[in-house]
Length: 209
Image (cartoon, rainbow, N blue to C red; front, side, top):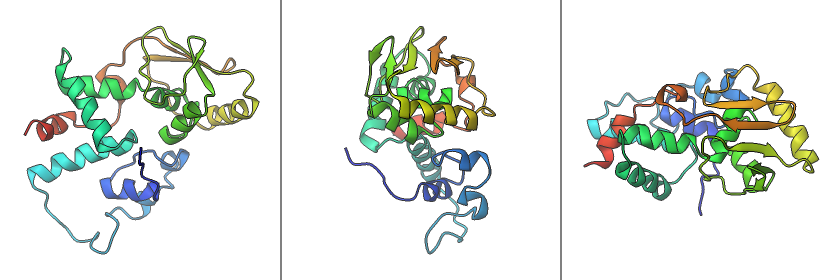
């Protein structure tokens, strides 16, 4: 599948917020969106008033880029959320949070979701003792995510990442054992656990047209 390979900070500037695509740079205020708080491009500094559709589109693009997905995959998540019981927007965010690459990021094993995706795709992690190399794998309450012991190179990298991200709190729905390089899914993520400034209702309104 095709994937965006351009400058990550450009996406942060386009959406006007930190998408945490460059690891600890966003945490430390070194993202270029802090230095240039206007969209990239020739006309980035022009003030443009967005229509209702434009506001909804920007919110969808922000969330899609935050979790590192393309339109077709993101829309499929929305279709599943629409058919599920409960509030559609919350169901969508719950599924995005339960992606294995995102869980790696939330646990602190990776400094960004991009790095989490790479860690999973390289087959460095197990879920309940079984190797999983699918970044979109949906974790469930009770699942145990652990680094393969024989992956010494990745183990050193994960330990370093845990040191870098120790100031970033682990969500209440996850538990992490830094010594064993292991994480446990304690429960299903609630809306309050996500923390990001996301207005999921705008995405629902966009796709419901």
